[in-house]
Amino acid sequence: MNNNLNKDQLRKQSVSKLKTLTGTKKQWDAFCDYLDILISEQHTKLEKSESLVAVHRAQGAIDILRYLKYLKDEASE
Image 1 (cartoon, rainbow, N blue to C red):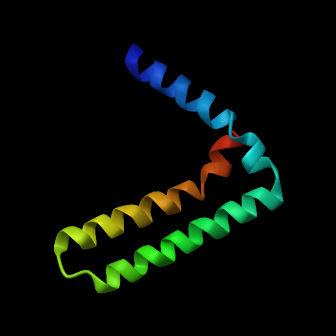
Image 2 (image 1 turned 90 degrees about the vertical axis):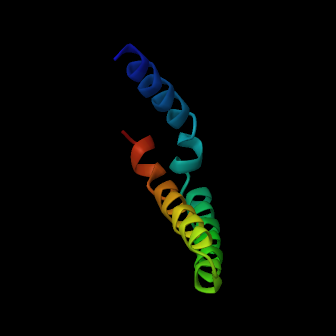
């Protein structure tokens, strides 16, 4: 329980340090545009994958990149 509390506190502290990125519309939009480019690259890899491992890696990467787009919501809490 105590270990989870420490992880939550560390996570909140880290996210709060990113408020300058998420608080500035121009920077946040540029960051999201960059994430969209990376997601598009992963979609291409997904389409061309010849192994199940490569498919899973691309799917995982897309999932994480999409999660980063919600960082702004987490930082505003």
